[in-house]
Length: 383
Ligand SMILES: *[C@@H]1O[C@H](CO)[C@@H](O)[C@H](O)[C@H]1NC(C)=O
Ligand SMILES: *[C@@H]1O[C@H](CO)[C@@H](O)[C@H](O)[C@H]1NC(C)=O
Image (cartoon, rainbow, N blue to C red; front, side, top):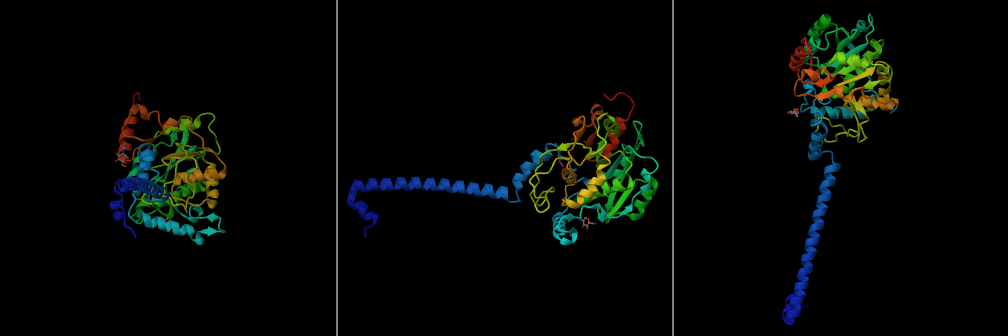
């Protein structure tokens, strides 16, 4: 056998030529191979990033573009009372398990976790709708311990019983909370007659239950109301503009759901996100059209329909999208408000003139609500 070295020595230039050719080919092959390798690596990285649920960079990008820059609000995802704690994942696991557990399903088709008849009212103020059929009922989901938010609302947009000649009532929906003083809540209710409490655990991940219990209360305790609104506790609500909107001719009296409409919103699959929804809970990559949870308005025939249809909808923890799912399942479509720009989200600066034209704004704090409202209510022109 001849080694390449022997060959080189014997054949002189020809061997040099062969050697050059060999090296050139070798070089070409190596760079080609490297490029291929890089390409493969890139493909693998992209594949892993997009297929795995831990898309931290993708998620960040997504959040910033989809939510933070657009709304940057904590609403759908964590009003101040529901900061996400390290137990978040455990709680999700619990939900997970309970969904998979046959105990919560009957006949494999029914999902009872969000079905409100599973829960009982601790306080339900049945008399509030009896004497005077309201035109509009505002229901505010709030944590039992968040007395400050309730007080601020009672002093501001929840204060008046008569708005633009219509009866409007404001109520608060609470669940159970370990830190809440039961006696104090009872006293608060005796004073204001505006607390509704149900016996589910009041947690961020149970907000869908809270919404469905609101629907149950409206359907069973207040069926005479014409319209209702689910409105978050850290909102500025221009109640006059809302009533004026609902008084407009042409506003449907039935099957009406309006607010800030959200189309084609993708479901977040990153486990580290507050808004994470596992595929087992909600398999589609996108949500049906829904109204943003900060404040949505509906005709009061819908709550009974939502309650009924919720038996056949698998629960997931994004309450506003869940209502969108109920609408879809009912074969109903959402209605944009007469003036969509009246439903506003994040507010960074108070403007007396602008606040006189809108219906909602997210404030994020009760102090701001009191401050802005007292200025807004001062006599004199707004603009
Ligand atoms: C968005 O919200 C975060 C806190 O949730 C805050 O730090 C940030 O300043 C907000 N950005 C804007 C543009 O409002
Ligand atoms: C939701 O509420 C139910 C009923 O009170 C409770 O069993 C469950 O632990 C709660 N889930 C979470 C995630 O808080």
